[in-house]
Length: 121
Image 1 (cartoon, helix red, strand yellow):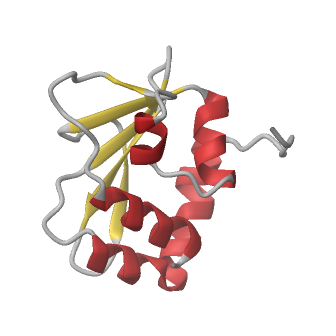
Image 2: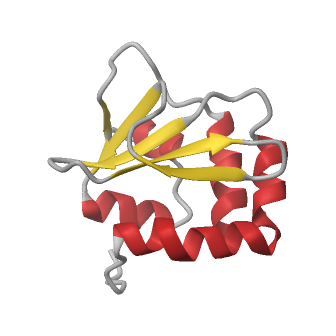
């Protein structure tokens, strides 16, 4: 795997991602997220977590685990998702991340939402 600069989990969710959403990615993501429940990404073995809450014209980024679906990743898995255009369903199917709730699966539709949030596509 290529070495990339380490991303700060909090800075990414509090600074970088909100800028991307405000630059037009938010509307694309909101359109892709219609009728989806919120999803949370949490770093393993920590209380660092952010929930992505679909809204009418953007995705709200909320600190904490206020979502029906919580996906746990370690730092390197989370960075792989960001740097390598990976989405949670791809990582889950490859067995690279686990969920805290065994009864739920991350919907495949979140893949397009995450791509829109991160890359505007």
